[in-house]
Length: 135
Image 1 (cartoon, helix red, strand yellow):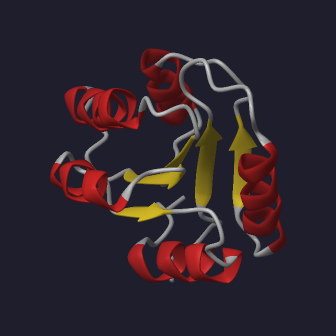
Image 2: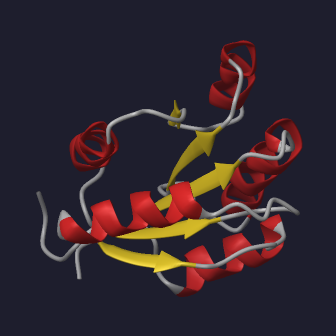
């Protein structure tokens, strides 16, 4: 693993107002030694991408329970690519049906984590899949 901590932006796009899971994951990532920015509720994909770029994020974790994942998650991945942040890993979590996972993966999402996934699995996936930027 390279120098510096892995930087993760955890975000709740759209109108979903339930953030307990996002906060649990954010704390677990922080406890694992990552730098975590939790953006709070009700952000647009554009706001999330802007935060990820400003924070020099290695990973963007999107938590969605509202059913808007087929639209919002691919939009974040597309906007990151358009802004040149192709190296940023995009993860999705929440109540996402299995049948929707292939479309999200095809849109550039590295992994989809559903409720009940142990946080250690999320941490391991990030640590194995990303090295922090050279700082």
